[in-house]
Length: 261
Picture: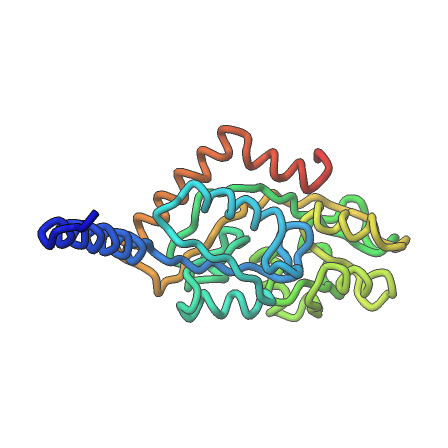
């Protein structure tokens, strides 16, 4: 069958139209780069396949419900991850607590999607049961994950005033090892993260001594990413995270990773 010229031109025009439409739709998809810590097991870390962890799984599940966006998640050392967001090289920091005084370069926070229990861990015999945090811990040496604001503003103020000595290591395991070896006295961190390490390591001298507060976990968006486009994405992401919390998706991800806790 020989196709006449008019019919061929019509088919070609239709093909060009649909290809152009598909290309325009692809170009309209907003690319969003989110970054997280590379060594904060089980919440954020990096494995052979890239970014991983509970927070990662939650955000990837959210991304699957947002087909109009091309959402990429990468992992770096926490200090590097913060730098990327602070300088606008990444749009959002996964895993930030609400810390406006410590991170003024975050202009907006997502709705919370997990709540962490922040606990003081010390070497056995260091503290008294009635101590008030952080005031009664003056004179001690604490260790902390590099760049983390977990110990809180009052604690960091005491560090700045040299009332508390602070050293920093990259990972939770490295920090706990300093306690076990007697090179530091106490450590403030999320309970699940510490218990995850303690269940794997033969540390015998470390005890939880005070649960000091709960902290909500967010995506913190860069001050360099503002306007209608960013605002729409943040609202869409918030709506999906709220829906995932309501329908049990977030809890299912947490339970799968922590064995039901």
